[in-house]
Picture 1: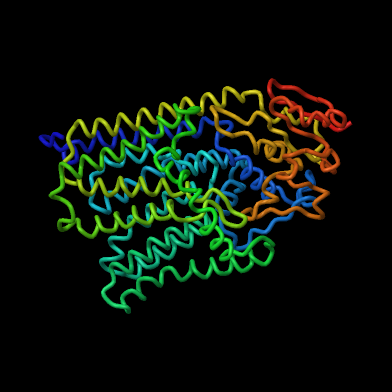
Picture 2 (picture 1 turned 180 degrees about the vertical axis):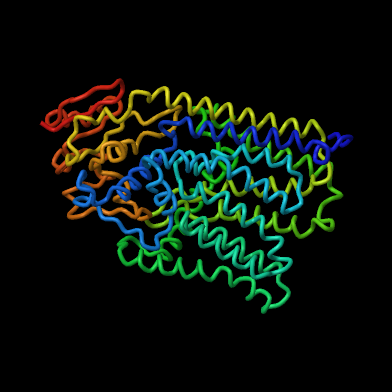
Length: 509
């Protein structure tokens, strides 16, 4: 590792040119999307459409759907993309993802600056911009990630000297995170709590610092009590006890995927795993090299507190990934959300160790890796929109808005990943129609059905289609791929009204 010309002190114009240029490229990529290749995005667009156009006489949303958004978590995306200043929820969603694409690397750069680290390490953050949360369309957790990183950035100052402004900033961030995603808020509060424990001299000092968590705790308690009243599944504590007794050991193999979760969607099979491992191990390699060549910097003043806090962030992320259940009653996909925090915390930690010098070769590598990552995702997004070019609003043009649509997605794969299962929600988004969206049967969404289950059957139960009578009031089936042989009986009740390549629209006789 050459240290003859430290780019951290002599290459600032070049740094900002390259860093800003990469942000522009990613923002442009997000703006270019017509359809986002992120699994649950259609769900969230459908929810926002119902919210924005509820009670309008031109649709029948208020006859089939019920909304409850009062002090609910995970609603920021809903409120943002539904703003009347946007011509449509899809336009608002473009703005949302463009803002995220800019905020994500900027938040890491801000944290590195606040920790006194080497800014060139911020290029490594681009490798996790489309992390597991983004790829699966977890829009609330997606936008929460950069704000959790901002909270990380404030921790050294908060620990060293508590001021009213810092206290309000901490409390405000935690409350804002609740409306982005409750799990992200709980994780941030967990890190905050442990930092205050480890950096408080007295009990009185600790209580003063931890009071910033109180508003979030009140919101969480209010939401959980109200949510539990209408949930009829197993209790949380009994579920957790049963999980660790019966299921935890079986989950260890999945938890070994720490180094592949955040980019494996790029390619099918082993190629996807290899590319994902390359990006994740690039961070590991950088941190290891810094530890080897800059070991004299470990825990030295004035970087000691910052190093300890960043290590605590790594430890909290790793513990969440390794220990929490794969799902909770009514909620799913939990552990994979935390790998991004593990790697971002490692990037910040490495930047502190390399705060004084970074050789040109090292700087060149992080920029190269970030550019390769962009090219891979640009190809992925371009290819997805090319493949689905014909799937647009006019595909549903002949369908009456009052008719009820479900889907049978037998070919759910794009580059080996299941990305089409929520596409029936585009009937809600584009035509303001009624669909058996998964939103109705998931605990975490603010949408419920009106009336009995047979008036709008469960999306999850319809996935089997074992009995035509279970279709109830269904008028249309959106089909992707061939109808499997075990579902051939559907042809006795439905006929093909429209074909578009691999897509077909089946109508009830």
